[in-house]
Image (cartoon, rainbow, N blue to C red; front, top):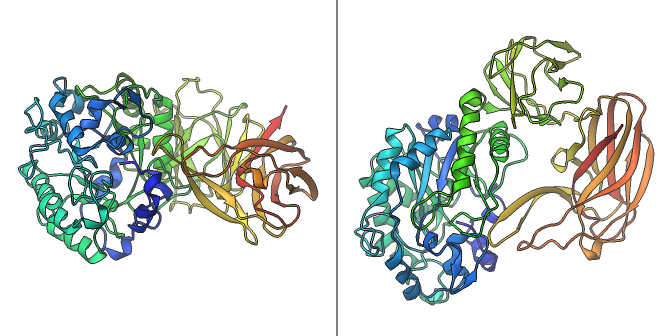
Length: 594
C-alpha cells in the first residue's frame, strides 16, 4: 500500500499521488452525482484497515536482514525473486486467526467499518480464488478461507465489511505492474493482466462474500480514464450499493482518500477518508513497536472528524493471525472513550469553529461539540466567533451544566467547577439557536496566556509576492509518509507570510519560528514584523528537503513581543534581502512568559 521513492517517476506518471497528497486524484465532478448509499459512510467516522498477507509471515526480515517501514513492501525492498517468495506460502499457517475475536475487537473499539487486504502488491490472494493457485487455500497448509469467516463475523457485529484490492501492481504476475527485477516492464501487457486476473478476482470478491460496504482500490495504472470508467461499470453491476474508493484512479470513485497519514489542514465538504497505520508499518513487522497510544488515536480521530472526514486506522496481524498486543489494548481504550463520547464523533459534520489552542470542534444541527485536549490554566474556555444565542453548555459524559457568558460574538465557558478526569479529549456540548454559524477561515488565530504554547500554523497565513502555502511530503522509514503544510517560495523582501492573531491577554510572548532550512539557505537574514516593530534574525540549518528522509524542523526564538493590550495583531515574516528561498516555514509559536 505504501509507495516507494524509487518509483516516484512512474507513480506520478500514472496519476497516483499518495506520497504527495491526493488533492488532484479525485474529481467528484466527473461522477454523476453522489452515490445513493454514501450516507452511512459519512456517518461512520471510524474504520479499521487490516493489512494481512505473506509479508506478515516474514515479519520484516529476509535472509537475516531487518527491513523497516512498510512491511508489505518487503518483496520489493529485498528484490525477492518470485519463486522464492512463493515458497513463503508453504509455512504460512495462521492457526490463531479467529474471525469472531477480530470482529469483537472492532466492535469494542467503536469501529463502524472494516477493510482488509484481499490481494496486495505481492500478488498473493488471502481468499479462495479460482483464478490462481497462489492463494491461502491452495498454496498454504492453512487450507481455509479467512475472508468468508470474517465477512460473516463483522456483519453479525453490525460492522460493514470491505476488501482492499491492488488492481494494477502485482509482483507475482509477468503482466502485473511493477516487478522489474523478474520481468521486463517493456514487454508487459497490462490489459491482459486485468482480463486474466484483476477483473476476474474482483468479480469473485463481489460475488462470493455477501454485500460489501467498500471496495478499496490502490495504485492505479495501465488504464485510460475511459477504461477505468468501464472497469468500474463492469464491477458496479455486481454490487451497486458498494462504495468504490478514489484510488481506483483517473479522478473517479465514490469518496476521496487522502494520502497515507495525511489530514487536510482545513474542513473539506463531501465524503472523504484519512488513513493512518497504528505503528510505522502497514503490514506486520516484529521489530516495529512504535504504536500510537489511545490518546493519540482519540485526538487524531477528533481532528479528522473536525475537518469533516473519516479516520481508517490500520493494524497488521502477524503470520499466525494474532493482532499485536498494543493494537488490541489501545483500540479497546479508544472504544471505551467512544462509549461515552461517541455522540461527538459519529454522524457529525465538520467543526464550525477553527482549531483553537485548547482543541477542535465537531457539530450537529443546533449543537457544537468542543473537544478540549487541554484546559486553559484559568478554567475559562474561549470559543470565538459564535454569534448565535447559546441556550446551554454541558459536559457530554455526565450532562453536568456549566456556566457561560456571551459577549461581542464570543462564548466563554467556565470549566473550573468540572473535575479534571485526565481524559485525552474532554467534550463539552454547546446548544445554540438559529442556523449554523458559518465557518470563518479568515478568523484570527487565538493566542492566549492560558496555554503553554500557541501554535500559529502555516495554513492560517496570507501570502504576498512569490510566497505560497504547500503540503510537503517526506518519509521517516521506507514508505512511512508524513505531510506538513509550510509557507515556501520566499526569496525577496516582497515575499511575505502574514499571520493574523488575536491576543486575549496583555503580556510578554516569546515568538518562535518553526521551520526547515537546508544548508544553501542557512545564514540568510530574515525579518519578523509585529506592532510596528521589526526584528531581524539569521536562518539556521536543519536539513535538506528529501522525500525519502525526515524533514527536520527547528524552533528558532526570534523575539519577545510585549502585547500592551488585547486585540488583533499581524505578524509578518519575510526575507531581509533577495536570495535563495529563506526556509520552509511550518508556523509561528507564541509562548507566554509568566
